[in-house]
Image (cartoon, rainbow, N blue to C red; front, side, top):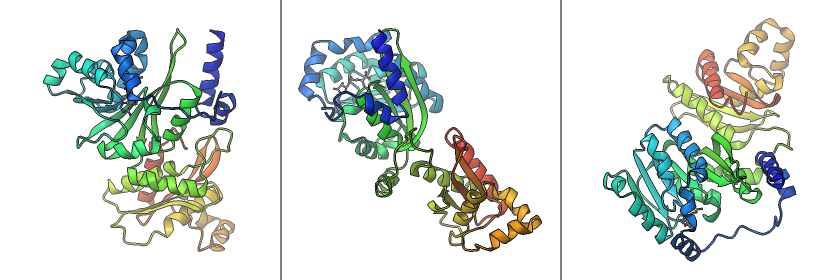
Length: 379
Ligand SMILES: C[S@@+](CC[C@H](N)C(=O)[O-])C[C@H]1O[C@@H](n2cnc3c(N)ncnc32)[C@H](O)[C@@H]1O
């Protein structure tokens, strides 16, 4: 037990510190090899996975089901690698509108079909035989779940992009994974594909542990583009050993949230996120915005340079001649008007967000609304 506790300690430490995991990982160069379908078939026939229906083996299912129902009442869920569809037992209490489970093991699907006959007849449940790496359906869902199987389904990035068309707007990926250092590499990669909306660890008295999470991916196309840019720019995944910095997915989300906040008021705006040197990471412009998006990156760079919001710098420019002179010295780079905010992670200045081409008051409100949406990650 002492060893298990030590292992759990390392696993927990590596959740946000991949290097800790890499350091303690055994056989770190050996890839995870997905088991062939014949092995799954045999083990389902032999009843090896009957234990997955036991209450003490389903804490992760119940937590994930509650996380999902909390954000999507009466959710529509697609589960890939669903086995016998045991996750449905946890969803049942939340009255899901739809549950489709897909597995490539026929004995598993057959067992699930037999157990969930009434729910299938009611049109709520469907269990299908298919390979989760390339399964296709026209149905859309609030959440696509990979529970205890993501390591068998190929590259995480391809998987998320493949199922992106099946997600409703605002939909997300649900994950449970056995807590172990090597599979956590996949979690680190999944995290970079979007916004983590829930993350928790279930720790059982018998020594088991699961990571349970919900991640809202960027739209598939943006994900691919982001990955390309991230690769070219060597944007590193979250790593607590590195100084905190803005990553590209969060920057895109912030700029987009700012545009959306203004659009909700009928205001077509521009928005930009810059890094801690004032260089733009993202510039977005609502199609109906009348101007080229020049002001937003300048406003964001000014918020970084003075580590202050535009709502404070704008009156200061009028009252403080020295400050006004510093702004005037760099007219092509600085703009102190309202609508900008400096961004901090762990108390460190990491960049700036700004909205422009609407009134300064509206720009300020949109930027603050966008920041509030991600206040668990950036201040
Ligand atoms: C450990 S079981 C988890 C079952 C279920 N998701 C749960 O949480 O109880 C892993 C499942 O993944 C399925 N699986 C593995 N590779 C798959 C693939 N390529 N396509 C579909 N299912 C797959 C296996 O057949 C098995 O049912």
